[in-house]
Image (cartoon, one colour):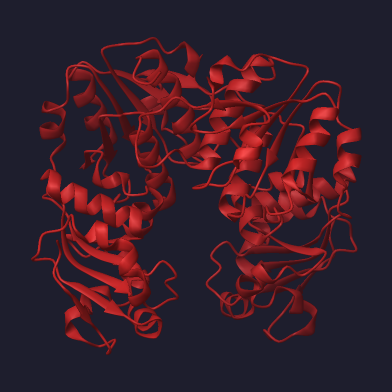
Amino acid sequence: MAADPVRIDDPGDPRIAGFVSIRERDLTGRDGLFIAEGTVVLRMLGEAGALGNGFAAEAILLLENRLAGVADVLASFPQTVPVYVASQAVFNAVAGFDMHRGVLALGRKPAAEIGATLLGRLPETSLVLAGCGLSNHDNVGSIFRNAAAFGADAVFLDETSCDPLYRKAVRVSVGSVLTVPFSRGLSAVVMLQGLAEAGFEIWGLSPRGDVPVASIPAARRIALVLGTEGEGLPEVILSSFRTARIPQRPGLDSLNVATASGIALYQIALAMERVG
Amino acid sequence: MAADPVRIDDPGDPRIAGFVSIRERDLTGRDGLFIAEGTVVLRMLGEAGALGNGFAAEAILLLENRLAGVADVLASFPQTVPVYVASQAVFNAVAGFDMHRGVLALGRKPAAEIGATLLGRLPETSLVLAGCGLSNHDNVGSIFRNAAAFGADAVFLDETSCDPLYRKAVRVSVGSVLTVPFSRGLSAVVMLQGLAEAGFEIWGLSPRGDVPVASIPAARRIALVLGTEGEGLPEVILSSFRTARIPQRPGLDSLNVATASGIALYQIALAMERVG
């Protein structure tokens, strides 16, 4: 059980300094910390900590009327985690905007996992996602949510993709960024070469892909590669690996990349008999 | 070609009053008008007007450095549509927030189409979506984008669903709300009864659905029914019609409703041979 709740009446109280103006700071990337919003994400942060995957809570800030509703969630945190409660006025003054959810936690990230380390501990039979240039936080969050829903073992992001632990990505992922292992930071080409050398069949997803996604055959290890919306995957990747498309009406705009990832993952998870 | 551009130097200029504080006014639902953002949506508004489906532009407001880039898009609007250009400072002061896109149009909605009228003009072979309680603008926008991608003939929304012409929904739909016919306003039960009487096979999408979506058989007319995220479809609907599920890992949270709609539409469009 987390610590006994402490009431905060001053938005400038140093004990809650970590929660100040979280919307603006979202993009500044404070090393090592992230913001978790909402009851579901708070619950997953508690479970992640209990699982020992390296995520931990530094502090929890609640709207006073939300305290009773999250009592069972607080039970999953160690007693060293402070819990602060505040009125709506104080809460909004701290957060810097109208935070209807009223449930916030400041989390600490685990040490970043090197791509090779994550690759080395994947199961013999694996399904992973690889993202190249995924710079939109909503899309990255949605992609993690899809990865969790279809049982992907890991997500690899290249150096030009955004941090999945940005506030909006965490929220949109409904906490899946805390449970699906990921690594980020290599160049796209090095990342995909590493996957290929580890026995992964690499499939690039593109509106111009060679085969429909339903034709991707089952394999021991499959990596689905996603490119940025608009530009799509670069030619050097499309020409180096096999490619698949989602059949759709011809038109100006293809599917959103998160939706496309969901459809392709669904189809591959069926082929690999990971869902039934 | 739209009218010759007029430079605006005063954010209070009455000619651009319709664009003032669009973010805040988004939720107030000014009858008859909507905001279109970005080049792609502007292009679709121009095409919609030319198609005569009832959408029209009232005015266009551009960041001065965007004018050259949208010249070809402006060509699709009638000369009666005024075009205003402004500096970044004036543009931001008008919009009320930092509008990086720099491309806005004030659109006029067509007269709302009655569900029965839309139903009456659907083709003999039809695929439609029916939404019950879809109150999130992002989800509704994404659902329209998916509907366009998979060639759905129409979208029916119940009275508790939100207006697809809200600013965020228009943006997320990438303008698909201007091309996919829709009707909104009946109770869910009346809406679905109307579809059933018009010969539609009704399939409710639910994590607890009876069959996997891949087992939905082709039919002359299919209506895919989507419920609100979280609650899902009400029991009265699930028990009255056939239901389908997307196979996924058991867990706290199901797929996002927009992603789920994409997967189910993809599967049904394949079954009906609407995409290939």
